[in-house]
Length: 238
Length: 107
Image 1 (tube, one colour):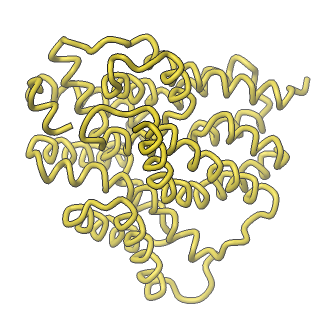
Image 2 (cartoon, rainbow over the protein chains, first blue to last red; image 1 turned 30 degrees about the horizontal axis):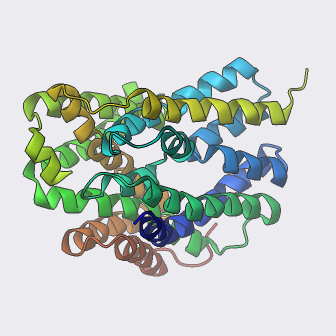
């Protein structure tokens, strides 16, 4: 059972890994521009697995910021993972072991989280491990290539691949929205607010990570008040 | 004073791990409170929707190829829901659209 779930995770992880390869390529190029060696950049990718978080970290490193500063910047840029991990904690079976949680915590990120949440039933930790095992090397390898050999991919290909991960997000939220009118409304409202905040002068100085957190907290709370989820409904639609 | 890059990396890795790991290990029980349950139920949809739009439109070389990727991605996701199919059709659409929209070498 667990073995089959692990293998299924590997399979689902393949497109994630390919998408990562393309995205982390750009990250590797940035790392080189910020003065990191290929080893340092790859090590960061292996240990951190967070795009915005790593961009922010490389920027602080290049500016020779303080150790406390880089810790704060990192906690803020990655704060949305607090919400994702909290949501995952409810998706896991209550009897999931501590080591399962400790391993999953190593790689909670947008794409794998999206796949985990799209599960019909509770999340089998081994399905998650399978996705991690295949996705993480893609992220590290892309960083390594970007940092060591620079841009070998034609620009047209990079531009095309840059939407791969967004396509995966759509594959998670749209089918759920099709089945549930409230989720459809929530998705449309989130996109509208996200667009509004991205052009509203008051929020222009606010990083996209912080914007996502604000939108997530406010709109999820609003939806929870207006459309509280009953036990059975959550089971059907989650 | 020059900072040690490996110490930087260790701090970044540790901070990120704590942010992800603590909610997973501290919230062990199923939450009964309806508001909190509902809140966490909506979190993924709000987060993923807000992360996708308008970012997908700005990710590509040309805004209109990004718009095309969004429209095609939504349609394919609505009809099939297959992860790989949605992601790859969005990529293909961008590639084809930019063959028409962007002439000459891309910089």
